Each structure stands twice: as structure tokens, then as C-alpha cells.
Image 1 (tube, rainbow, N blue to C red):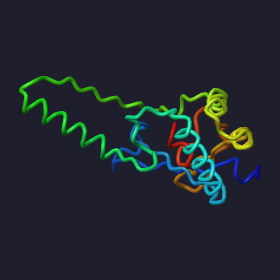
Image 2: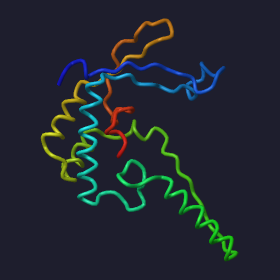
Image 3: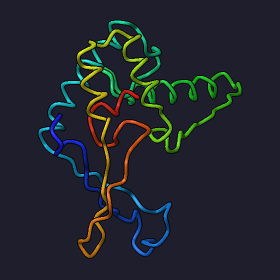
Length: 165
């Protein structure tokens, strides 16, 4: 794996003007090597194909799947609400927001699951190598860069294979 693919530069952008010093209002934007993004898009296609062939994902999973859309889920939800209203019934709705879910995924467990779900062994080994020395550096407003910050958990956000997780 090329060493230039190991790291990423991260810039911090406030979600709202005036909240630059509030940590929860900062959005990290990851800038990565373009060639690495191309290769990871190939891995993502292979992973997606493997997940579909193995019927791993729930039928209700719409996001990041071929020929599906979260719009279908919204349409189903609106239809259910209309049905309840028409029949004068009741409905209980729960919305879940898995905050920081990317940061909690164990990479060894992820690679184990990829193997279990039938992803090509060469691809899994390449992903393991890709993540082995992964790190980021933060670009500060003055242009200075932080020291390398090792990344030990979760798929890299902003790369294509992070989507199915």
C-alpha cells in the first residue's frame, strides 16, 4: 500500500457561524488521496455485491444500496401515517440517531465479518493493509498541521466503503 494513502488531512468547519469554538458544532472534512478514493470505490462495489449476494442486509435497509432509495422509506412512512389517520388508529414512531457510529466499529471485527459474508480474501487483506497505518492530521486555520493521529476504530469517513457500515 502506498504510504501517501495511509494518511488524510482533516479540516474543521463550523456547522454554524459563531459556533467555531463549540466542539459539537464542528464538522471534520477529510481530504484524501484521489487514487485511494478510486481504489476504495472498487472495494465498495465488491463489498456491496457480496452483501447483496449473501442477503446480509435487512430488506428494509434502503440507503447505499443499488436500485433503492431512502425516498421509498419516507413514502412508506407517510403511507402508514395516512392509513392510521384514515382508520382512526394510533401509531408509535421512534427515530434513532446513531451518533458517532463510525467511530465505534472494531476494525478486526469488521474484517472478520467481511470474510464471513464472502468478500474476496484478497480484498479483505488489502483493506487490512490500508487501515494498518491509517492516520489523520488536522489542518489548523493558520495552515499548520497537527502531529499524526492514529486511527484505530471505524472505517474512514468520506471514503466510499464507509457507506454500507
